[in-house]
Length: 250
Image (cartoon, rainbow, N blue to C red; front, side, top):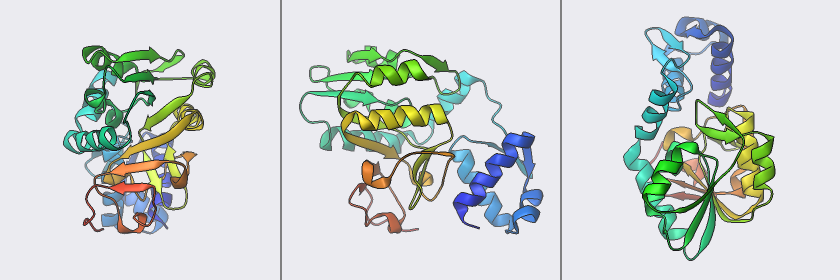
């Protein structure tokens, strides 16, 4: 069974039972305990579960604590990605769609208050956008407490009325064949619409996001520019993948 298929199975069982044991997953899909533990570690890094002794449970942090943890996780790498994007993709005056997410949050200090206007569905971006005096439009719609992303039909309709020079997006999973995906269908639809309305779309991705799948695809690799610090070698033949560390191997 491929890693992406194992991850799908693990998340399905977790959603069904709220907790899982390593031994039960091993018995069900006939993999080694070491493999399943590595899978759980990857999914925990993606904030899709919480590791406990012998297995995993659904995340139990408060919404505020969970968001703060996501923003802090891998902060140095995310700042590297943000700086690269600002230098290579955001030259001149631009209207930018800024996706809700922890990686995209790190781009805000690198934006130019005189040149950039931001349209965003990320409620948690607002305080920082105000701090850096960035001209901003907040999309209206339904607020998801877990991610502080604004989603729903109202948000989609509003995005359809804009044209973006750049759409800057986060991602949960990247797979060589399945493309880019996220666990939430409403957030996936927002990402799809932003890509459709943008001249260029840039995705910020951590190494752990590669070779994984989530439930809802929102783009193919060929549709976007993926910026990452490290990525598996097999993804480097894509012209759309910009790897800051060319010498990392998996």
